[in-house]
Image (cartoon, rainbow, N blue to C red):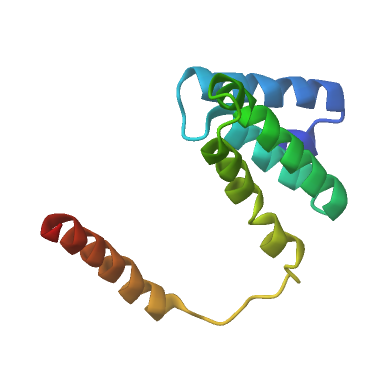
Length: 124
């Protein structure tokens, strides 16, 4: 995002972002090119929520298209798309203000839910 803001020539910025996305995909980074391009879409369209949402939906569909075609549009893959797009609802309604401070709740919740998942695994 620093590149996007600092470089005057946006064509060069686009090329660099796609090079970074390619590198992320080739090196098997978490979320690969999809992750890099998603961050980019959210950043450049941060003031234009409709464009942000439409771009992210298109990017998500393109990301899952190979697995959709390979699985003959199996419903599970369609659910992956829907659950990837679902957080857009919360993002679009975010008012820019900090919510309740839940720091101590999170300190307790994370280890507690991991413990519950572990116990569920060993007891079943």
